[in-house]
Length: 284
Image (cartoon, one colour):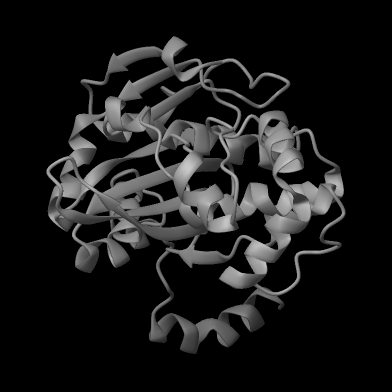
């Protein structure tokens, strides 16, 4: 479904209600493009303001038909994917036989070599097939493919990640499994693991000032649910480096995702000391 056809609304209740069941909806479609409407939660913008950057975050629970964003307009604006493009790039390389496995992290020169081996025609064909962003390509190196012709919105990033997790992309199951497995994980709190791809790229504001674009795109695994997300930020290069992660964790914390306060309390030293006696008494 094109982004312009999504229903748009602004959320007026506290954001904590998102995890209280209000997002429940019909199951995802067969293609995994699950978001039928987008709800704006303006209070999340303060996470960006605190970090001194602008941008948006998109959140969707896997299988639901509603996405939540901090800024509707920014969530639908096409941006260069920078190195978040490595996920569809890896799928294309695997499906065309240019790569047999994920291998070590590709350097810039290696990425360009792989892109050249795929070829512009096959690259364009596969971007259309994957329905990734605007599916635009330009002739030349991997750098031009990632920064000049190709544009993807934060909502489209979440769409792609959802289809990857559901295994509904038009690629082999093996290729999709490899692409999922290369995304690094980080435990936050006691019950959540964030798996995400980050990237930074130079950009220019309308006023001509130098700025940088930052992405953090991936998903959060919890015992009972999975949340997909895409955070896009723009700002001073000195701030962008750490802000994508910081903003994302700030919003997650407001929703109780990875919140240390939700962890089960550790037993006291006194309780640990008496545990053997208690066990012995139970066994009598």
